[in-house]
Image (tube, rainbow, N blue to C red):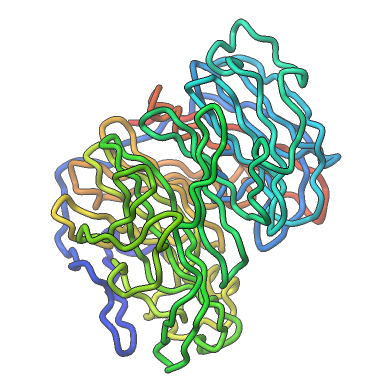
Length: 472
């Protein structure tokens, strides 16, 4: 069903307001939504590893940060090939051929959590690879110094990488999930990861400046939270929609909580995710503040705990709210978050999160203004998928979302991001579901690279491809 272009999220939930932010009802016609143009496609692997697990593919999950990344005129990508080997590839932009390196590691289990994430430490020009983790010790490798800062002078071969380790150069992280790299304004590399498990886990940070060191836990698994049905949960984990530095040096984190007690649900077929929360840090992830600027946690000290004061968009746990969707920051330092769930106009009790989300799920654009107020708008095209949507901004702060199946919508900054319009939809690409995007190439070149795997069946390998789009 196609919804009106500016339908706003007025989803009244029993016993609670629909949103913390004001509703927006005006129609803006200031500017047309920006367009995209497909420049080219390239194939990385004709037969990449394929199996569906937790509704996703191990080569293309939204929480990979990053599966594809650009630095110094070269682009890097990673995946598991048909024989389960971890592969890292590079190409010279814009049209160079992909060169591939097979690392000495093979995927241990058929689990789509066990993705590969790439990070770059600009200060010493190393490529870092974290892989194959879901509540187990990390598999980690890094390149020699200078490999990505002077790529044209270095051959691309496995000898450029060190051994695969189970620690970060001796720093033992324990059992972890969701390794994600992020670069600080000072060109240090940080690693975000979760310890513990779903419904009972904590977010932690490590930092690399030539050597790795752990900064510690910054979110708490404990504390009491009571659902609308009166059931109290005492454990949870914070699922990040993103962890991004803005141009102002601020580190932003929007998130949802997942409760450990399934009794908070109206039906056991739902998800215990609830609420959209927000914190930020102005000291590189050491101290965390809420939307009003109050200190709410310290890394390695008193971590961020569950609190209604952190909620910027309230939602009870009965709507199949997805975790780890998407976040980006515009040039003015305003965070933008994509969330998705089943609105109350369809049901107040999700009984099968996969089926109900595919049938009724809707995506929403949630954004913070400079004065601290939050606004939420419903995206006018349904995802028709359990998968997540990615958001990115061009250099003029126009917004683009890449939905499941590789569909792209855009909205102009001039309209206040109210004119969301479908600008690319090509079913013949045969995209499985979720995709990854190269944020760094958008920033450096204004080109959006979309990394996707084609749909297959069972465990039959399928191609992995990259589509490049000119934005605006």
